[in-house]
Length: 258
Image 1 (cartoon, rainbow, N blue to C red):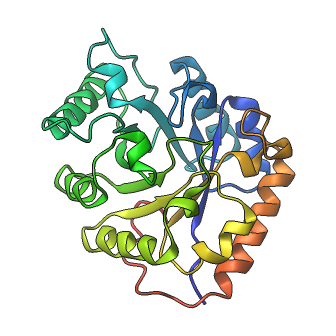
Image 2: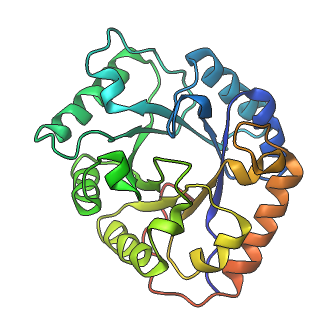
Image 3: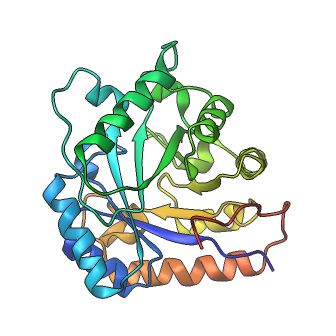
């Protein structure tokens, strides 16, 4: 039996967080989908989601999208993040040809850390449609994530109109990235308009976290509200798909997602 990944649901407010929690989510992720693939919600919204999760189930993991590194390079002060976050992630779009992208990424990370009282682990983000995102290569991102003590790597899609994750990467490619991540002590999260139809292919990989937004929303519309029954249905289908799949290799590191 293939070990079932953790389920992450991206929410835009505390009400959606409660719906995700009712559907038995493992990680509540805060983002504002109207602001891009990793659109950052306002800091007070992130705080309200963290508070709602703490009331519902102490110790349940929360993560937050912080936009793209390029959003903050020429910006003034970065907002202070609330305590209670376990993970935070920054996108690397527009940086494929920037020799200084690693330094820029670390600089923005450090600015958030210095502005905030809490602490969290970083998740490196690689875009499957990297040409559209103009983002660095997967192996470069994994290596930089390991070198800077990230907890994991997320593979997502940048252009939500150009198909789902599996349009751009097949299970063999995802298995390869998973092996590279696990060998570097990182977990692998996957996202990008994933649906129940995606799960049989994902079950052939060694991903540790499956992230959804549109599949958790009314009518599979990522701009609509998260519904608890959609989350519960996806979770049930994921458990079935992974329980009947054959391993493509050792799952590697589980720290950070168990």
